[in-house]
Length: 374
Image 1: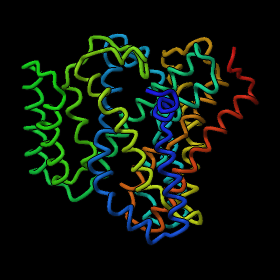
Image 2: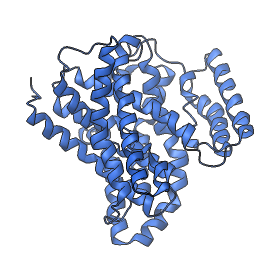
Image 3: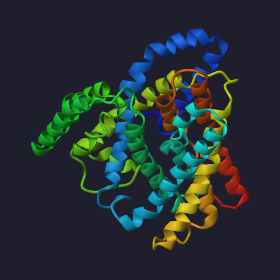
């Protein structure tokens, strides 16, 4: 793989390119943009994003393996507590602002500022902290836990249609049952899990009223995996041959192109689409994340959890700001929370502008004298 292409993939630049293309097109010719985005909306949001959430689930599953950051409750507890705080406070800020605005329809967007984009927060952490700093794995685990909880929120609070327990049962029960059978038969081809259990799960969620993009969340844990976790983004994973890693190898690059089209299909809003939802999302992410992360971390320490000696209060504050990059997941939550219209566009603008958390975190690190080459 050429170096430039690897840099594009590793830094999720295709997602940014898709979002920028959408913004430019929507502001030059909004009707033609909406026609183009409407054509691919279902294919991207309901089908393509299945694989994005599947790869996020893969990281959560591997983090629970021996050696993984979620394998030990004592090790995982502190950043998981931080993730919970980084979701509760932003949600409260959003809800408080929504109630104060007297627009009841805004309340449904409370989960939008709960999101943390794993890839971009990780890149921000690498740009700020020394390579050996415990702040980087702390932020990564926080983002993983955030995504895991976010999947639950999406499934429970944001059904895509009226819930049908019959359709959910008809799809999910045989899907999970078939996945268990495939695992016990030691089937190692991931396509068997996608074509059988994955398709059943997608149909059950789609017709049952839950978002079908979560179709593989219940299937990925049954794919045969390695015995130990090497760590998220560890380059040695490229040489592992278990089903879960081969699935990640096969879909890692296609998912980046899916994210390009996701950005294109969802980020095209008028630059004038700034209103109350924009500031509620930004307030939750830029202010709520660091407040929630720091407060919940300090609270967790009072009940017996310990943070690394090098992870001081300054680093925690910077971690909280970097975790405020919502972007991908925040955009997805916005489309699930609101119907197409001005409110959705304004909420999307808040999700897009959350990218400002990256330069804010880098600038704050300089002010607090956190040195990259320590």
